[in-house]
Image 1 (cartoon, rainbow, N blue to C red):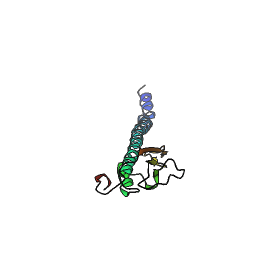
Image 2: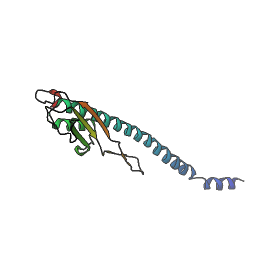
Image 3: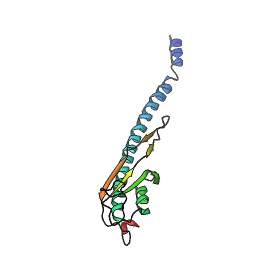
Image 4: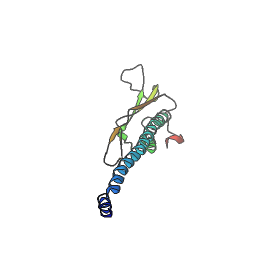
Length: 149
C-alpha cells in the first residue's frame, strides 16, 4: 500500500509548478493589460490637454510660434511635430488664409498619433482619435508674452 502512494506522489511532483505557471501567465498578462489601459487613458487625456494648450497658446502667441508645438510636446513627449496641425482661420473665405490683423480663430488639431503598448507577448499600436480645439483670436503677439517663451 505504501509503494502505491509513493508512486502516485512521484507522478504528481511537477503539476504544482505547471499549474502555477499557467495561472501566473494569465494573471500577470491581465494585470499588465489593466495597467496598460490606465496608460492609454492617461495618454488620451494628455492628448486632449495638449490640444487645448496648443489652441490657447496659438491665440495669444505670434503666428506659427515654435513655443506652441514645443509646449504641446512637453505635455505628451511622444508627440511628433508632424502630428500637430495649427490652422489660422478666416471663416468667410474658403481658403482660410489670414494675417494677424484679420484672423478670426485658431484651430489646433492632433492627428495620426498612435500609442504603443508594452504588454508582453501582445505588442499593439493603438491609434488615438483625432482631437481638435478651436478658439477665437486674441492678441497673437509673442513680444513680452511670458506664455510664448
